[in-house]
Length: 318
Image 1 (cartoon, rainbow, N blue to C red):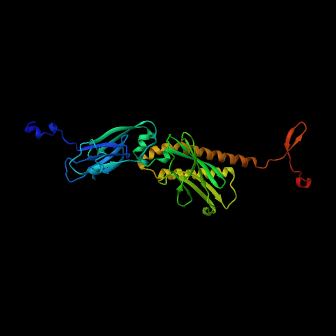
Image 2 (cartoon, rainbow, N blue to C red; image 1 turned 180 degrees about the vertical axis):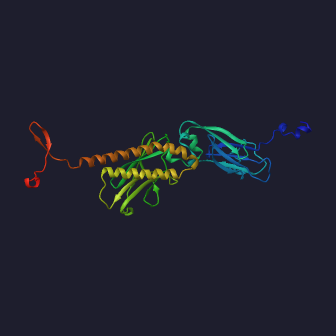
């Protein structure tokens, strides 16, 4: 190697300013990034999924904390230049939950690409996600009250093998872990039972809710106390109104960037709820129509039927 080669980074192999890798053992994306133009500043890196920025971090962590997991990369000479990224669960879109391929990229805010790869399938996607998106993975169905407990099941929408970590809440009391007593062999359905504590019930409407670890609502079941028992139509209407309230809260608590896709996902559910409400309203109208008094009729020979008219005295007729 000549003296000119010693000053030529291309000849000796320049140390890269930014590199990253997926750490599957800890479910994260780690790497380092060093600003090329300012020795005192820190780089900001961004995590992109399918061309959409979902998270960012400052590259100011110590590379020695990641030295074992960064083995194989050319570590920089600057210690505080490492970063760690995970996918926020609220940023996942319905189209990304499944068996399709999701493009993953790490960029700097200066426009440089640090890592460009793809992840395949739900298993890999959830490994890198900070918390499972329970509203996209599971559906709650209530079967009703029996023996002092609310029975129901959690339907697995995408073949996730493990039982979901969900919570149950009565009114405004603290949430408690949802107890499962049976699961299908393929893990598609998990049955639960929520004991109803009478001392926690209040007069009027009570709500038993199933929520995720981050209090994300999945379903609600109303219980009426202290008034006349609701009929079947009224009970269904109350349950539908509670479900609409939960859907409204679900939409309003989402990441604004993921809101359009989640609204499209919920559109069919809202249409079904409105259809059921219209069916209940039509049933009530039909009952009211059948309950209306009908004028009595008499049969006259050769003239079919005719309505009965009151007999008016002759004096009144004059």
